[in-house]
Amino acid sequence: MALALQAEGLWKLYESGESVIQAVQNVSLSVDEASMVAIMGPSGCGKTTLLNVLSGIDEPNSGTVMVNGENLYGSSDDERTRVRGRNMGFIFQEFNLLPVMTALENVELPLLIQGTPAQEARQEATKALTAVGLGDRLEHRPAELSGGQQQRVAIARAVVHRPAIVLCDEPTGNLDAETSSSVIQLLRTLCNVGKTTFLIVTHDETVAKQCDTIKHMSDGQFLEESAEEE
Image (cartoon, rainbow, N blue to C red):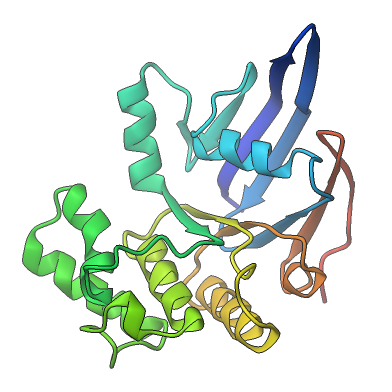
């Protein structure tokens, strides 16, 4: 099976006074296309730092990250931006929607930034919102939507350009249990039916159990890998 993301030998060090903090220590990770992988661990274990390195936000001290076969940390910052924009989607705990824009406008924005013609961007954004169950909320602004609906808009925005992988940082952290369950079921459907790949940092075991693989972190390193969910 092809890999959506492959990381090898990642290290991320921070200086703190006279000390050096090893936030990520020699981490390697492979994520198959059309799969869901969860990263779990206690606060301060390095999972958010790892996600930042995998997403191109925070450059590693050493190691490589390949996304859809392209080197994320290649020749220049412009190249990194291009690789991220084409191959990655992002879902956060905070929905990060623009309040003055409608759901449709929020979702089509990343396509417009990439140079997609306006009519095509609107069509693709409409399809994405319909796929997440919000085809009847296209003209609603974020304040007119529930928390769960806002996260669905954020999910549509993350997948509208058909990225190789979607990186999720506590995507259900601001949602109640019932809404959280519906959102993670949606991600599972997008994975199974839409063949979208998800890498999810979460503290919620219920979310992690919906994934194909669970990776546990402690002190900047991966521990054992759990068996694939049946």
